[in-house]
Amino acid sequence: MAERTLRGARLGGQSFEDERGIEFAARQQVGYLCKQGHEFEVTMSVEADIPANWECPRCGAEALSTAGILPEAKVEKPARTHWDMLLERRSEKELEDILKERLELLRGGAIGPAHLHRANRKKRVS
Image 1 (spheres, one colour):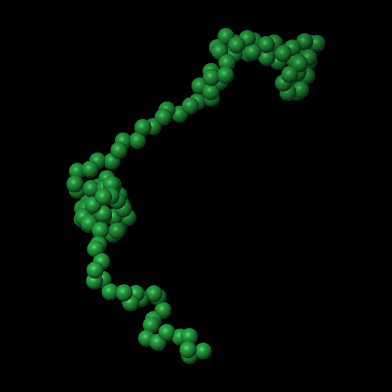
Image 2 (tube, rainbow, N blue to C red; image 1 turned 120 degrees about the horizontal axis):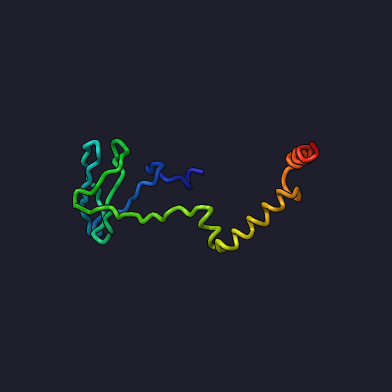
């Protein structure tokens, strides 16, 4: 059992390689300022696209870049209403014809709640 253990090594993955001969990627410091006045910097690659906003590490609020990068304006589509979707399937003339037909059926007692039709019959008999 003692043959398989690593002596002097801790749990947690400490690397035994040294950093000689390693060329690190080019980096830049990007500054941000949140609404609470907290100023901080984030290290990023020179090749990275710099985001316009970043979460503040102190308060969690949205922080804007101090380099003058503005967030992209999101184009919001207007909400489609039931009427808009209905007009995609039928013309107004067709809708008027359907309405007229359904109103005739409703008034004639062919469709609709039964309790409404009984009330209409009592009124006619009296």
